[in-house]
Each structure stands twice: as C-alpha cells, then as structure tokens.
Image (tube, rainbow, N blue to C red; front, side, top):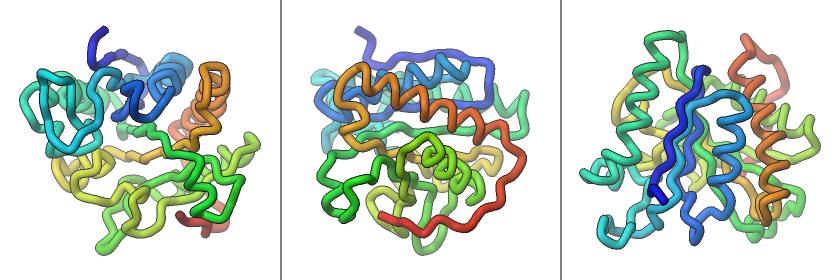
Length: 230
C-alpha cells in the first residue's frame, strides 16, 4: 500500500486527509476519497504516515498536518508536493483553488462543548492576529448546508486547536508559508460517530461532499453569522 494516495480531478478543489493512518483519524481516508470521486476533485490522502512528534521515514512516522514535518524530504515528496502541484495546475485554469482538510475528532468533544449534537467543527483561521483562510461567507455557507442536511456544525474558536490558525497547521499553508490569495481552505473536523464504520463514513462523505460542491459553485451567501464556536 502506498503511504499517500493521489487522485487527479477536473474541478478547482483539493480534498486532503492528513491523518488517514488507521491508528489516527479513523475512516477519514474513505470520506476524503469518496468526496473527491463524487465531485471530481483532486485528492491527497495520507494512509500510511502515522502521526508522531518526530519524522521517521523508516518507521512511517510523521504528522502530515504539521507543515514543518511536511518539509522533511520524503514527506514533502509524497504528501506536500502533490498539493503544491495540484494548486498550481488549478490556478492556471480557475480563479480560485479550494482545499478542504478532512480530520477526525473524538466523541468526547461533544461533552467538552456541552452539546451532544455537535457533528463538525469548521476551522478557517480565526485567531490573533486573524489569518483567515477563506471568505467568511463560504464558511457560513458550508455550515448552513451541513445543517440543511440534518447535521450540526460549529466554527473553530479563535486561536483554538480546531481553528486552523496555527502557523504549522496545514490549513495555513497558503497564508503563512506560500502566500496565495487565490487559495481558499477550511479544516473540517468530523466527530467519530459520523465515521464509526464504513457505511456511516460513506453516508457522511456523500452529504459533506454535496455541501462542499455547492460551496465551491456558489457566488455568494447572505445569512446571519453563526456564533457557535468550539
């Protein structure tokens, strides 16, 4: 099995699963690949690098959501470079490149949020100073569409672990490392209940993929600002 699965597409969208190793964010490989195939997006799916604090290529250890790790030679070649190539290819053809980083969070986060209905947390760079990775209306639209499909989504709290704000977070790749305003990205955290087995993960992927497709196609969205943060 290749450590990283690469899929080519024909839409201005890249679906990325940084922690798809079986011991990390369970079933996010299935969700990412299903979304990509359903909407004809590009995809970079880590399935062999196990998350660790240090890079060890011989032991398949690296954190593919850590930009510093992704600049290590082998990890860069297998995981980061395909993202950069796809972005360049898309930018030559479209006005924007959209990247969605698919992550998993445990059910305990529902308890910590005091909301047993929380299904997703969407990170888009809230912090001090702000480092927004997408237009706020697109984040609002994604949340709106997720909720229209019967699920509940929060936005990542300012500077929090799920905000997608930290410098080494891959969500900041085209803000704090390779600045490119044509790139819009979001970090999508999915509760374990929505990916607890293959059938559930496929259902989640279909609904999330439909929402992502509409976010990419939309020219605008006006709604009250969502104020549920975690």
